[in-house]
Image (tube, rainbow, N blue to C red; front, side, top):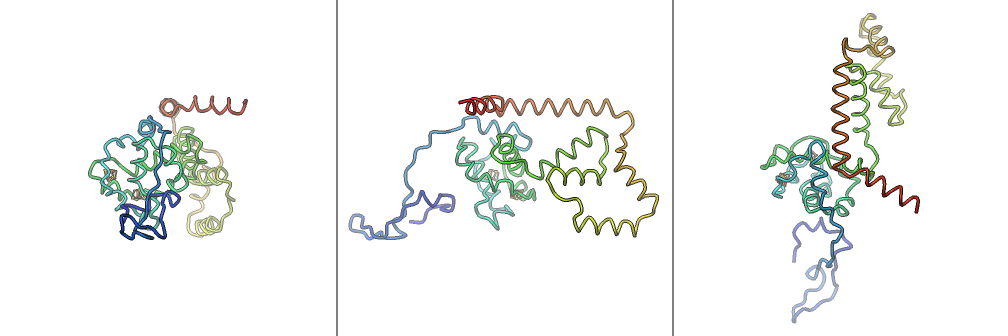
Length: 255
Ligand code: SF4
Ligand code: SF4
């Protein structure tokens, strides 16, 4: 008997008997495929609330599992294991250990938002994918992605100066992701800029990279932004019970 969405069942949970007769009917091979029974006892009853506490995950409770997001998904087209509908199901059910089995591919969402346009319930599945990827990082299940590191570099620069200076952003992003600065495409870009841009503009750009000018009267705005960031960070830390997680890890190490 064909199993609906068989690809979602782990191969180790499937059993097929080469030779099997049931009530006189030959169901050998493919026809005797069974899903082995199992008991799930490690539900995380707060998992949906944890994802909903992160930016993008707020509307996850609206999902009615129609699957339009997965049908529309760019990444699912090339990797059937990338399945937003399925992950939203696992999160809503609190099946954290099942979700963690896919932790290394959830970050692959390319933010094309095709799922968002297909979703009839305004769940914003793209946002849920981002929230889930951040949840994995905040809980220590995956390292910070290059995208998170870029966000950090960008935000730090805005808070400090009220401006974005591309040269410094790239420099810091490469340092944080341990990439060499002199990459072929950068060398080529700099050569072309030197050939094509006026000297005064090049000097201004070089100076901005070195001295990091600030927007005038930026202090109050900077403080307000930082206060908001800290407030959100604290709320998320509380929603994800990160303090308890750290305490448990410390006790485990001590033991
Ligand atoms: S935004 Fe992400 S989850 Fe949505 S369709 Fe694009 S790749 Fe798939
Ligand atoms: S399209 Fe929307 S409602 Fe349908 S499964 Fe995806 S997230 Fe849920």
